Amino acid sequence: MNRLSTERRAQIIGCLVEGMSIRATTRLAGCSSNTVSKLLVDIGTACSAFMDEAMRDLSCRRIECDEIWSFVAMKERHVPEDRRGEYGVGDVWTWIGIDADTKLVPSFLVGQRDTPDAFAFMEDLASRLANRVQLTTDGLRTYLVAVENAFGSDIDYATIVKLYGADPEPQRRYSPAKCIGSERTVIQGDPDQRLISTSYIERQNLTLRMGNRRFTRLTNAFSKKVENHAASVALHFMHYNFGRVHKSLKNPYPRTPAMAAGIEDHVWTLREIAALLD
Image 1 (cartoon, rainbow, N blue to C red):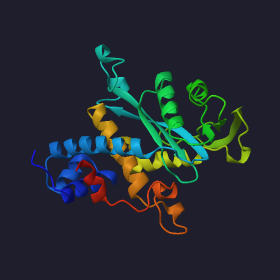
Image 2 (tube, rainbow, N blue to C red):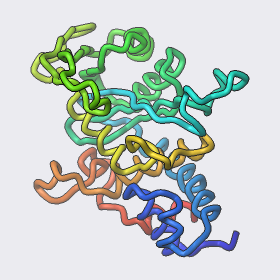
Image 3 (spheres, one colour):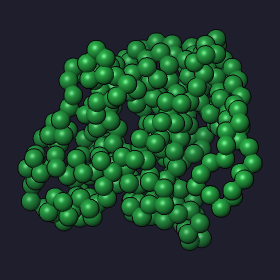
């Protein structure tokens, strides 16, 4: 394709990070869908490489982790028998960790909801932290061995499991039942009971759903290739960490999570993100 100017790239990136689909982006930017798709993969790769280098020796104190579902090519129930178990077709999960204080997302992983990817995610997260942290996850059993493998005894770790009542309106299938309580369990170390929570990571899941069409409920904007899906996730977190001022970080002045974490000194513009390809 003809090389896009940095300004055109920034325009396309701005559409994508605000939750627009590929086709809506092509209509506003006046370019082809192939151009947008190729730019997405290129900029996603560049963002992933940049964050991999920037997110090191982080002084986080409280980390919350969760995993969020999406799909690639088709939903799991539509995968033909001869493609069952093929990675990148059907269910795809994104593992996410967030710093509860700065709202920084230091680590994420697109993969499967299984033990090998739980190990890979936790090892990556542990490699980016400079000190002992308090970690909270949900009750997914694969976390237990993955956390021990990645952190050893150098962590204060707890789980929280929410309890839901019976759904009085089963036809409301996309609305969760009423939460009637939670169970907090200390797994390792001495975590502060008051800080055992997954509220911030659950709110981050909503931010991802609102900012990336591939995670929207009942979406038709899914990726056909897992590489494109991973690129869109990388772009989302690049903009979230470096280019989006967080409402809870407005004091003493408007800041992004990267600024609050001390790894950046200004709010990145879309043009700066687009210039990563240069």
